[in-house]
Image 1 (tube, one colour):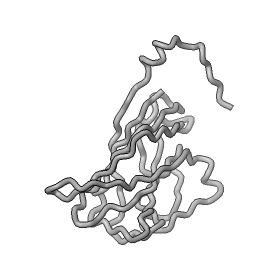
Image 2: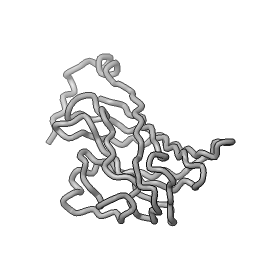
Image 3: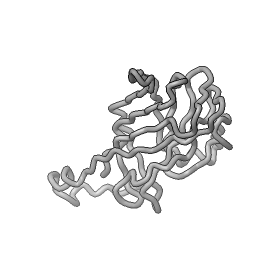
Length: 172
């Protein structure tokens, strides 16, 4: 069990040591039809998500941008993990979570509230107040994200790099 040391730093020292960061990653995918409940992206590293090796952080917000103006953005489930666990064989394949791989899963949330950015027809969605506490593996400062199509229909990106996200993190 983790040990919490409440008296190690004064309150003002603790507040001043919290770092807020905005980390951008490309949700690399395959340019193919991705059906509902299939992987859009898998094991995408969010580098330096925590301040120290094996540290923790809070995912506070996420902004998802779809630069493909020819396709409507799907509802996406984000599954956060502490290691690059494979939750399927490839993008465009069914989500396949083995019991042995659930230990490294830290939580999930869905983003679906897209707005069109005229005149470009690109779309953007924002989810705030997530408040998901995450912890990196003991030998890493990174966490990983897997993305699943939860739209109820097919999603067919025309490029492998059109989905991007910016994750707002409060590091401890």
